[in-house]
Structure formats: C-alpha cells, structure tokens
Length: 224
Image (cartoon, rainbow, N blue to C red; front, side, top):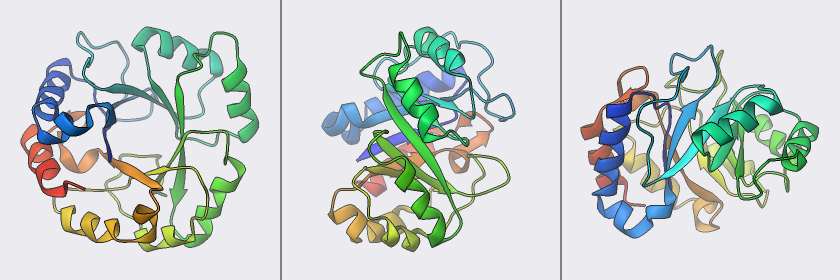
C-alpha cells in the first residue's frame, strides 16, 4: 500500500516525518511506497514558494500542480527532482499527452490525475484519462482543490471499473483506520486497484506542518 503524506513545506518537519516513517515497520516492508507531496499552487495555504533547505531522500517526491503550464512543471521536476507529478486541476487529456512527450520530460516520472468526487456520477470522469496516467487520486469535490479535510462517500468507488490503480484521498484522519480496514475488504482493494492513501490536513497542527506522532500512530494502526 502506498502512503502519501502531502502538503509538506517546512524543512525540519520534512525531516521528522521522513525519519518517523523510515523507522516504522511500514517502511521496512514497503520503502518504495512512501511518497511525500509538495504543492506548487500559489492559492494553497501549503504552497511551496521556495525550495526547502532539506528535501527527503528516503521516499519518492510528488509535485502537486493545478492548471500549471508545462514549462512550470518541467522546471519544478528539475529543481526538486520529482518522481511523480500530480495534476489536481482541470488538465485535459490532450494536455497530459502533450506533457508526456514534451522535450525534457523524464520518461520515468509518473503521472497522477486527481478526480474530484461528490457523487457516483463524478467517478466516470476517469474514462477520459484511462491509459495516459499512472494513477488516479479520488478526492472530495470542494471549493478549493485538495487539503479541505472533507470526506466523500467511499462506496461510490464501486462504480469505478477502470484498469488504472488509484489513491484514496479526501479528509482521511487519525480515526479512520478501522474504516480503511473495512474498505480494504471491498472489491476496489481485493482487485488491487486501490493502491494506497493520501494524508494531509487532518494530520496537521498548522497548514503544511504535520503532527509526526499522529502519523506514526495511524500508520501502525492501518497496516493494510
């Protein structure tokens, strides 16, 4: 299972979160499945306006973009040595195809497309992106993209019949371990399509500052 901790910015907090997870049994078993996300959307309260003095070395780095230019994404890939690019806006399939083939775009950089969900009808949005991204991320539809601390009804994911693995996002918090265990028994998990979870605002003491102890305890409990 992938665990993505998103909305990071503070160098010392990055170091502490990385150390906590790197010392956990999860990391021992699944070191390649730990991701850390950096948000490059200026309207976000977790916006990374300048390169932190420390960046993680024991996990994969994810850059989160909202309707950014291809040149901006390329620049951030180079500056932050991103392993993943997460597109969280209204990026079209044609935009993603163009991004894939643009000169200088690393062939091993994986793409995540966020799909905003409030009802089962929203799930069908994935169909336009099937086969051109590596993962979907199903998040709660809200006024602002991501980091809202709000959950959607996970049962609507029963309507997902694609072949692309996805991450579950949207207000997952410290008290959701049992709920995730129950979801683990659903067809989404049993078929291997739900690849992991995205954690953000409900593990924070302030925007872009994670509560390390809450993360450690949650990862112990979830053990999916």
